[in-house]
Length: 128
View 1 (cartoon, rainbow, N blue to C red):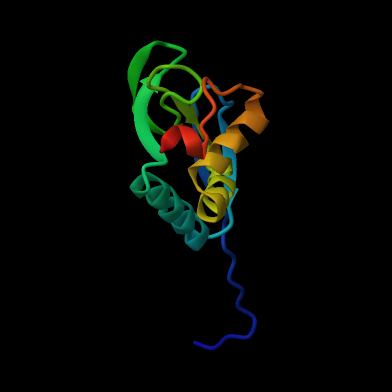
View 2: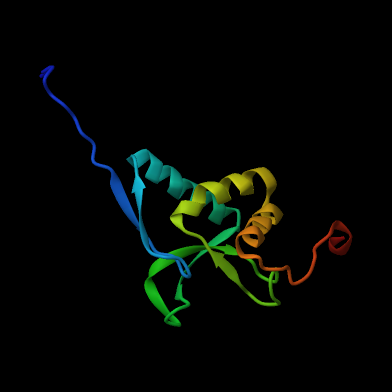
């Protein structure tokens, strides 16, 4: 069937993004390949121990059914286990920063977004 009057239309996909501390929004995904690429980047961030997944909802104080990706920030901003939740919109940026500059640059990205201060300064001298 080679009909020159035929047209093909592709409907964009939508992904519901839920993030602790973020507004819920719909993110338009242009193609299935874009969606797969986002998940591959999240998987890489998880494999590198930069991101973990939690079902804990800070607002309700309960565990829910939705897993949320968060950057691990243990002992960075407070002497405690902690994390900074990221949204689907943040994945490309966090991935690029992590690939080019590593964990410390990802922490600097969080500081730039939040204005938080480090609990303690990490330098080469203090880690040796």
